[in-house]
Image 1 (spheres, rainbow, N blue to C red):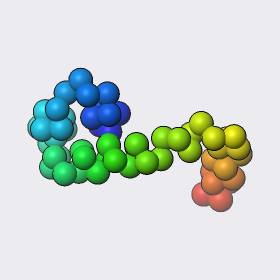
Image 2: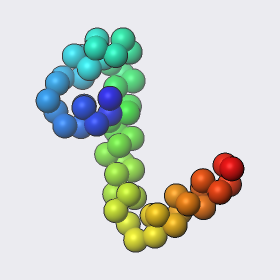
Image 3: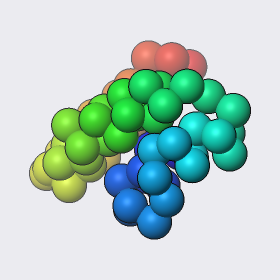
Image 4: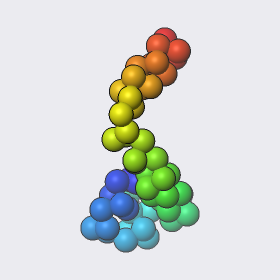
Length: 57
């Protein structure tokens, strides 16, 4: 849902209606993606993800 909002193909209201959530929730997901997306492309991001997965396991 956050990705759909980020892509801008549909409005926040359309996405909220489609997934039966409040528009504020869609906006929060979109903001979280915008804020955290650069982390995906940082060097060492894979190592951090693997460490997190080991902690969870």
